[in-house]
Image (cartoon, rainbow, N blue to C red; front, side, top):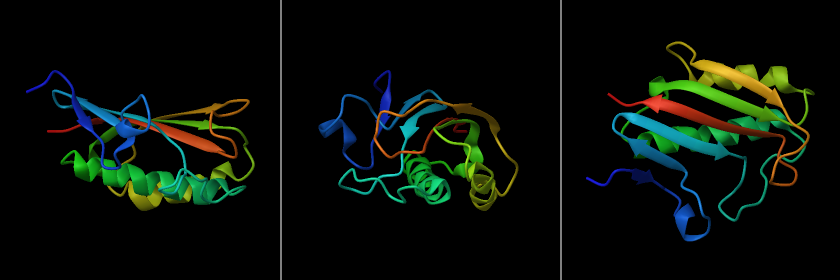
Length: 128
């Protein structure tokens, strides 16, 4: 088994110099995800809740690809460019984390690398 197992359901590594997720042992480190479609266009421009939902859909797909589920996520970090509407993202979290919430951090930043992204989320999971 290679030292790092790359989890890449979207063939990101063909276009980018990072992996969507890397597994080392039973730990899964998930790169920051933004709300984009399969062409890289922002989904839900101006709507942090819609962007959060898109990110959580991707997160769920990554977890399935790694052989886990959302219940295996132990930590998330939200990087947000605005507080406007941020409280609405809690409802999205409730939809996806049904068996308890992971530890979480929220950080307000000036901007994100992808223009029009209002939120970027990274995560850590433990796969049993």
